[in-house]
Length: 601
Image 1 (cartoon, helix red, strand yellow):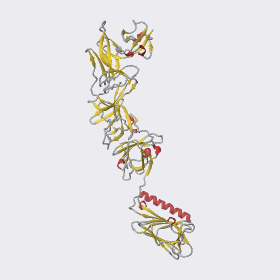
Image 2 (cartoon, one colour):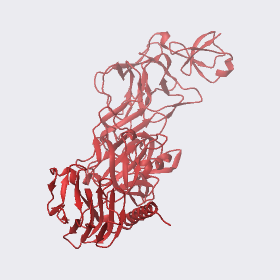
Image 3 (cartoon, one colour):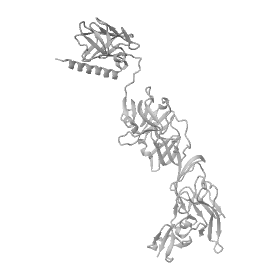
Image 4 (cartoon, one colour):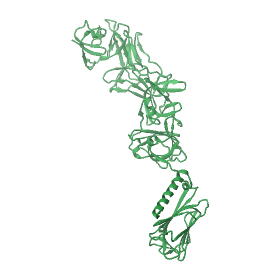
C-alpha cells in the first residue's frame, strides 16, 4: 500500500517532469507568472480583522470567507487564522490567464489535512505538514475548512497563472569561452560566458564585425572568434584592447571553417562587462606562416617575408618555398569603411609583411590588413639575399623594411629605394678619381662627406654610430626607379644594387677589409643586395681615401697552411695594393685574401 510520503514524492516528481516537459516544448508553463502575498510583511496589527478582498496584481485577487469567526491576523505565528467554515478563494479576472498552481504555507501544526479541508475548481491537491499545493487549471480556486473547533494559521500564498503576454527569458545552453563554443554544433544558439581569468580581449572592431581572442582553452592557448552585429546592439561600440567578461547570447556558426557568433533577437550587451585596459598590454598580432592560418581563423596575426602575386583581380601572398599555401590578400574586411593609416596596396613581385585579421569565405582563407595599435598593415621588404621587385610607380606613405645589417664597426656601402636622411654618423658619396703621376693605372678614389639627404637609388658609404639591424622606414616614399650610377670621367662609376648581383671579375670592385676596394676572386663574387660596387677600367689598381688604421682591417688573422689553397685568389697587401694571383712568389707576411686577413709563414 502506498503511504502518504510515497504519494507526495510521486506527485512532486510528476510535477517537476511536467515543468521540464513544458520548458522544452514551449507549453503553458513557459509563459507562467508568479504572484505572492506574505502576510507577515503586510504591516498588520495583532488581532486585526482581515479585509474581505485583497488585490495581488492586476489579474489575481484573494478573498476570505469568514465562517463562524471573523478571519484575523495574529502576530503569534505571523499568520491569518482560518476558523471552521472559513475559506480562501483565489480568482483571476482574465479567462485567458487561468490559475495553474497555488501553494499555501501554514504555521506548524495548524495546516489543512484531507480530513478537514475541501477544494473547488478540480485539480490535484498535495497536503504536507506545513503546506498545501493545488495544481490544475481554473479561473477560481477555493479551499474551505470544515466546521468544528480549531483553525489554520495561513502565513503565505503563492499563485501561479498563465500569462502569454509576459516575456520569458529563453533557456540557452551556457558555454565557457570560445573553446566551449567550439564544442557545439554549427547553428546552435547559446549563451557565451567569459570569466575575468579567460582574458577575453577585443582585437579589432568595425560597424559590422568584432574580433575577440581569449585564453579559455584548457592548455591556456589562444582562441579567436568573430562576433557579427554586436556593435549594432552594444550600449557603446566595442573597440580594440577592451577586456570582456560576463555573457552574451548569440548563434554559433562555422562559415568556411571560421568561427562566427552571430547576433539574434536575444542578443544584447546588458550582461557583458566591457572594460578599458588598465594594466593589460595592447593586443598584438601572433606571428604565423601561411600553412598555420587555418588554426588562427578570426585572429590577429602577422606574416613576414611573403611574395606577392597578382592573378586577375586576386592578390595572393605566399612563402616562396611553400606556394601551395597561398593566402588571398583582401583590401578591407566586410563592414569596414576605412582602410586605416599607412595602408597601401601590394603589387606584383613585392615582398611584404602583412598584419591583419584572418578571414575566410567560399574563395578560401584571406588576410585583411588592419591598423591596430600602430602596427602597420603592409610593410614592403627588401632583402639583401632575394630579388625584390620595385613598384610600377612611386608609393607615398609606405613603410619599408630592409633585411640587412649596417655595422658601426666598419664602413658599409649602401643603396636603398627610399631617401636616407642624414642624421648621426658619417655618410659619403663618390666625388673624385685621382690618378698618380707615376702610374696612371693606379688611382685613388675619393668620397666626400654628405650633409644633405641622399636620394633613393644613389649609392653611398656610411658608418653609423650604432649598428642598425633591419632598419625600417615609416611613412616614406618607396621609389619605383632602379639605382642610377654616379660616374666620373666616364670610366669610373659607383653603382648601387637592390638585389644580389654577380660582379665582373676584371672591372668591378667591392668595399672590404681595411675599407679598401677589392676585385673579386677569379671564380667571381656574388654580392648581396642593398650595397654598391665600384667599376673601373680593367687592370686598374684602386686605393681608397677611406683608410683607417691596420688594426681595424679585420677582426682576426687566419693562418695559411697550404699555399695551393689560394692559387686562384687575388692577393692584396694591407694597404690594399693588388700583389698578384696566388701566394707562390710571395714572402712570409700578412695579406688580405677575400676580404680576410691571412698570415703566411
